[in-house]
Length: 318
Ligand SMILES: C[S@@+](CC[C@H](N)C(=O)[O-])C[C@H]1O[C@@H](n2cnc3c(N)ncnc32)[C@H](O)[C@@H]1O
Image (cartoon, rainbow, N blue to C red; front, side, top):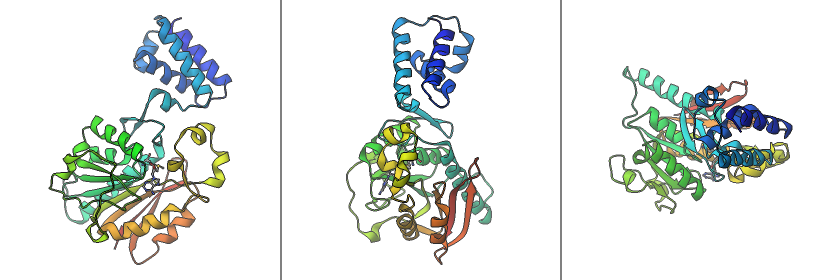
């Protein structure tokens, strides 16, 4: 079978199977099987596909129709222009989470201007936390943008931390991100920004001891916490409900349950003037905004995503 026919048949099967974005999914699966890029596929429609590749392609099409996300079949997803490994142990990074990166960088830039510094900020001296790092997408994207900043990325899932660690290595930022198994920020070690520990271990799945007084103060805390309500589970697309980790999806019965603890931990662990950036569920804003209406916080701002949904809330620690 040639490339054009395989693609045409793959698209038709996905469409009949009720798969959303069927053309893109068929293309991505074919690119994956052939190890080619998109341009090659459209430049070589007559090229014939080897039997085993054809078989593998239609097996993947069948698995997609049975509900597996395309990203689990290809093992990757792009985020902030970076190709990241994804497995069933991590949330597949979503495009709306890129607003976290934009807001964090914008707020840091404003801070630099306020301090009278005009050069491009490379993040020197900054310590940034990513809580619930999953694939590592937020910490890694920020680490690429701020090549001198240092990071602590936490997750309560040791399996997610292993994937995040591999992604950090893949993008050459593993020396600046310490991955820590923690409940939000609890059990974070004391980072010595100039010390050895950052390179000492890429992935830590062991609890690191240290009492509350030892916890570090951060310049930025970013998080995309689990924020879907369990009561909404039945309305989720099947590929999400059945294939993405529950621990990454559900914040509680309502969905917004994580924010109170996150915001109170952030208030303890941000430097004065430090920046908090949180992703919001589509209906979380009314529950979350009041939590930042306290004397701990100022400059609260909300950013909408491309669909007009309030997606990111940010604030500055007083
Ligand atoms: C919505 S996912 C976000 C993953 C990634 N940051 C992203 O934006 O794609 C939430 C992440 O928080 C982690 N998580 C859930 N409960 C947690 C907790 N109590 N402490 C730390 N991480 C937690 C999950 O394992 C998951 O990786």
